Image (cartoon, rainbow, N blue to C red; front, side, top):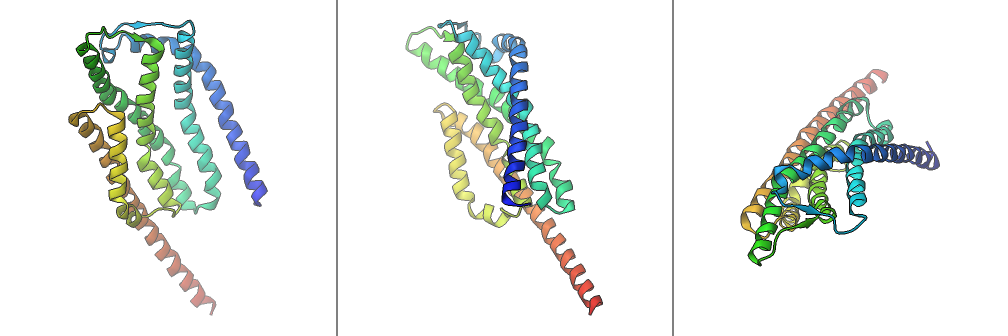
Length: 251
């Protein structure tokens, strides 16, 4: 395919992703109500009453939840479209292997969101409520501000937990290898620690509880990259052996 044909195919796949996102967004508005009611009465909210301080707060919250639902629905489809775009450049065995990235990536995205909601968010909200109580104020939150803070805290973890799949995918494409990942380990640890400290309250225990899983994710990524890389070396050696055998036969 020419460059123009590649761009046309990429454009077509992006259009399908956008169409599904819009459809899922409309459906998300319908399902947002029950989800909001569940989260309002969930123990993670800490029993803090939620108030509406602006006429558009309810609509804003509905759209935020609709966006989240649409994102969850669209992510696996977008990954499939990405795989479909790059798969013609892969070998047959690589195509079969990389197609399993899609359910794994979706599962890790959900696990990341759950980790952010059930582990990180309670620590942050309890810390904030404690600070509010110490200054003699009653912790009453606006519903738009509360859920906006929730989304800003939870959604990034969904993408952070995609790290092993991204590393595996890039290793399959031969853009990464375990040696390069090991070489930048210190820099990666430093960046992950900054992310953890930024997203958590300013206390040591919260930083550790979030930093350690991120470090484990990185080490898991290195291990996965090493497994994929070794398999690639074996495949290359087998291909080279077949090539030399065929060359000798032709001579």
